Length: 446
Image (cartoon, rainbow, N blue to C red; front, side, top):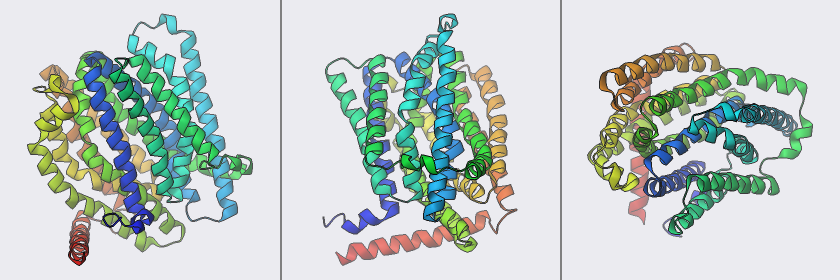
C-alpha cells in the first residue's frame, strides 16, 4: 500500500485513468488474441460489426450521455430524479426503435447477399439491447464523478470477456460466432449487476416529466447529430475499405487504430473528468473555472503526448508485431501508426474544443464541425484509393480531416470565450511544470 496510497482511490483523475487503462488494456489483450486465432477476413468482419454497433450507440449515447452530465451534475435531488427519469424514458425509446429497425431488416434477410451485412443484422438487435442498462449507469456515474464504480463495471465487462476468449483460444474454440455470443453474454452480465446494485437508478423512470423530456430532447438533438456524424466519420473509412479493398485489408488498417489507445486512454480520462467539472462550473455560474479547466486540460495533455509520440515513432514495428503477430509484420500498419501518432499531438485541443462548445450550449457548432470533417475526409479518401490502390489511400485522409475540424472548432469557440492556442500552450506548460515539481517532491520525500 506504500506504492499506491488509499487517497488515490478518492482521486477522480486517478480513478478515471485507471478505468480507461483497464478497458483499453483488456481491449488490447482481446485484439492481440483475436489477431492470432482468427483469419484476417474474420478479424475484419468483427470490426465491421463493431462499426455498426458503434454507429447505433452514437445515437443513444450522443443524444443522452452529454445531456445526462449536463443536467444532472450539481443539481438538486428532486431535479436529479426528473432528469434521470427522462433520460431513462428516452433511452428505452431509442433502444426499442433501433431494435425494431433491425427486426424489419431481419425479415428481409434472404434478399441480402453480403455475408458481413447478414451477420450484422442477425446479431445487432440483441447486442444493442444487452448494453442498455450498464450504458445508462455509466452516464449517471460520470455525472456523479463516481469513477470507482465505473472501474468495477468495466472490470466485470471487459475482464470476463477476455477471460472467456482466452479459454476459447486454448480450447481451439475461438470462432467468430463464439466471439459474438461472448460479447452479448458479458453485456448481459454487466447490465444485470448495474441493475441489482442500483447504479443505473431505473426507479427514477417514474419521476420523468414532459418538460424535462423536452428540455433534454432539445439539448440532445445537436449532440445527437454530432455523435452520429462523428461515428459516421470514423466509420466511413471502414466501409470504404471493406467494400473496395476487402475485410482482410480492414484488419491491417484497424491495427494502428487500436494502437492509438496509447493516447486515447489519458485523453478519454481527462475528457470525462473535465466535462463533469466544466458542467458543474457552468451550472453554478463559474465561467472562470470553466475556461481554466478547458485550457489547462488541453495544454497539459498536449505536452504529455510529445514524449509518447516520440517513443511510439521509433517502436512502431515492435508494437505492430506484439499486437498483431508475425503475419502483420512488414504490412503498412507500422507506418500508418507513425502517421497517426504524429498528428495525435493535436487531439487534446480538438477534443476539448468540442467538449467546451457542448457545455456552452453550442452543440450545433460541433455538429457543423463534424460535417466539415466528413466533407474533408470523403474526397481525400476516394482520391487516395484511386491513386494508391491500397490502404494508404484512406490513411492519408486522417490529417486533412483532423486539421479541418480543429480549425473550425477553434474559430467558433473564440467567439464565445477568451481562448487562444497561445493561452493553451502557456497554461499547459506552467501546469505541466507544476505537476512535475510536485511529483518529484513526493518522490524525494519517500
